[in-house]
Length: 367
Image 1 (tube, rainbow, N blue to C red):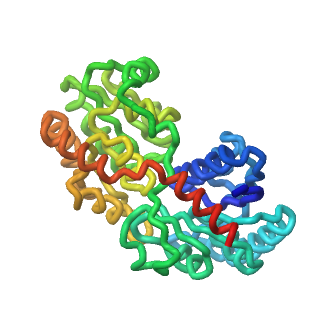
Image 2 (cartoon, helix red, strand yellow):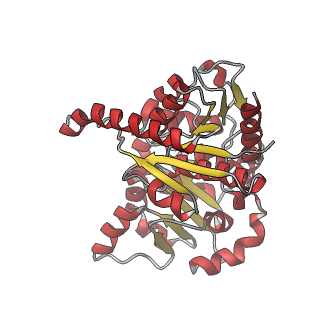
Image 3 (cartoon, rainbow, N blue to C red):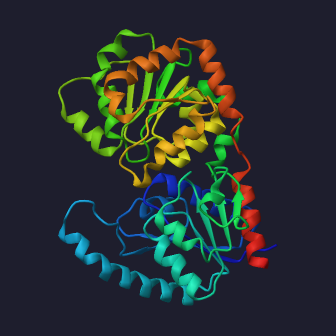
């Protein structure tokens, strides 16, 4: 089945963008001449990351509702109307066979307009608890690809397809063979126990502050830390007079996550949907610190999907500054626990997620 013209809409964070790119890459692998257009939100991460990956993107003047009282919220209705008109023009010009929503501000108006125009739509829901927008869009979507079992609690059972989350293709390779290359790439030791800290593509304040306050402890240990902190924290740290310990490597953003995972012995992470899916595929012992600042507290629900299977350790955000470093050192020194977590985590992996989603895309177009 040929796929010729597809729009993929959404973004805002890496958790939406990287699955979208994985889907696009698989469509292109099967259909080299396929035309794929992304629709994102102006000023958001996708406007940079999508063109870097070689795809065209158009930005909508859409934004989210601010939790605090601000004049920006009064502009939202006007931005929404402008976005609908722009999407209408884009769809009429591009003529897609299918519109895929991956979550984020832009997916709402894009998929609603496609549904009004009777164009088939497919949702890719990354989280274990869907947001309000996807619950609305699901009513007219042809299929909903989910990453967790039991999602028919929220969506029509006949539409739900349990596929898993698409992850970066290079994570499916044997990472063990990359450890020496990874150490050279990051300027670290291939033998020394390594803690990988990833707070998502934008960084995470709690993880950064927990690590920052524990630097003196880290310095005394025979370990090394590879720490993705986000742009704002890197700038803040570089302005301070306190030098980093020599066994800590601080980066704003890690481009080669395959090498970072290959080097890691223990991983500290937020519990965004993409992170949870990547961790399952990588199968490294992990400590999850769910962000409390997300809609529906979905990161805690994502984390519990692993913790309930004894496949990860949970540290609550409120307790992280006091206990995260000690919990990490305890795990790093417990070989039996590390093996148990890694084995249970690997059992939850769905490595064929991207291929399964594109299979469903083909079926939806045929219907």
